[in-house]
Image (cartoon, rainbow, N blue to C red; front, top):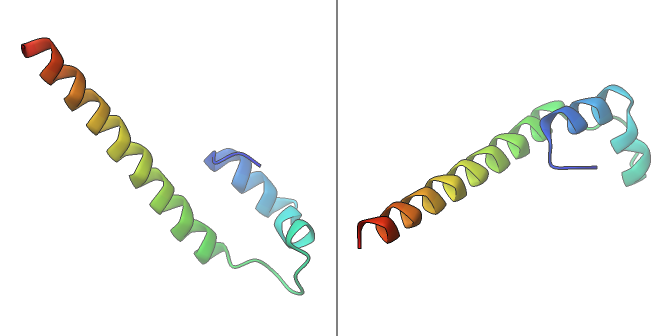
Length: 60
């Protein structure tokens, strides 16, 4: 599974996470949403940092 929101949503809809993790019961969609939010913030921070570094290099 990719760290893509669509892939994770599809996996939840198909209950693939429960089968792949071999757990009893359902996977908490709230927990998955929390992880997605953290991944999104991480990606956005990396993009900002990358853009900032590029700008600094151009100003020299």
